[in-house]
Amino acid sequence: MPSQTMSDSLETVRHRIRNIEDLRSVVRTMKAMAAASINQFEQAAAAVAGYQRSVELALSLCLDREIEERGRAARDRSSEKRGLVVIGTDQGMAGQFNEHLVEAVGEWRDAGDSGHRLWVVGERAMARLENAGFEVEATIAAPQSVEAISDLVSRVLPDLERAHLEGEVGPIEVCHQAPVAGAGYEARRTALLPLDQAWRAKIGGKGWPTRQLPEMIADDERSFQALVSEFLFVALYRAFAESAAAENGARLAAMQRAERNIDERQRELSLDYNRHRQATIDEELFDLVAGYRSLGGGRK
Image 1 (tube, rainbow, N blue to C red):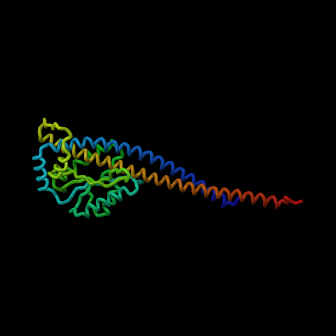
Image 2 (image 1 turned 45 degrees about the vertical axis):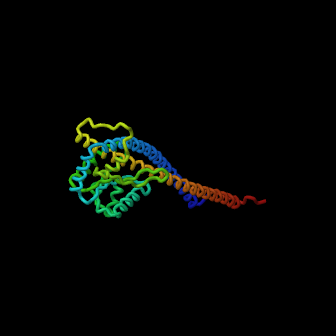
Image 3 (image 1 turned 180 degrees about the horizontal axis):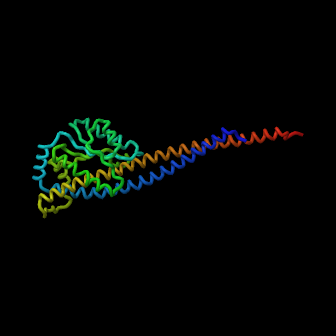
């Protein structure tokens, strides 16, 4: 009979193979979920991009004087601090997603900014930013579905507008990861407020897509307010959707790397199992031969 140690070793390898197969099943499930989520969030970002373009064009033609006066008033009462909405993630298994985002925010700060107040999406990003010395105004749970984005933006936006209008922060920007073909993702920084002449010059350079210019048929002030609110909403919505698509892309890449590592480990365990199995068979044969000889087998 094979020794107890040999049997134990063979069973240990069997147990490891079962564990690695269970892990492969988990990784494949997470890959499928990440791939499906990428498609949903990318479609949401693409859909809102066209609408964002229309809102920006409408704003670029609406009330130049209003924009100039509001920009001057905002500068008169604004803080030197910048407000940043940093969109990270609550979930793990996304590689260096949060680390790269925090590094980018740190580089922007080191470029000469006078200070920041942060609204941070995601507990993991929040912890890293606080460790880097940032003042976190609020932490917000990251949306886990396309349907959750609208509600999240509706809750975040009033606080940002209040802080800006009351002079607690000056310019407000959103910082997030966005998908990049062939490179995974990259950190982006987009201005939200104020809508000043610099913003007007940037948007105005795009030009109206047709020869016939639109006309305002409603009250100028109400139209302006509605367009500004819509502009801020879609800008934040798009940033959340792009960030979620990038996050799931990072998670998919991480799961693909994990699957390759699992394949390699499974091959090693299979070889190990075969060696142990062969050693067990050899030991059984040796025991049979030894028993046969001890009983006088093979004597003439």
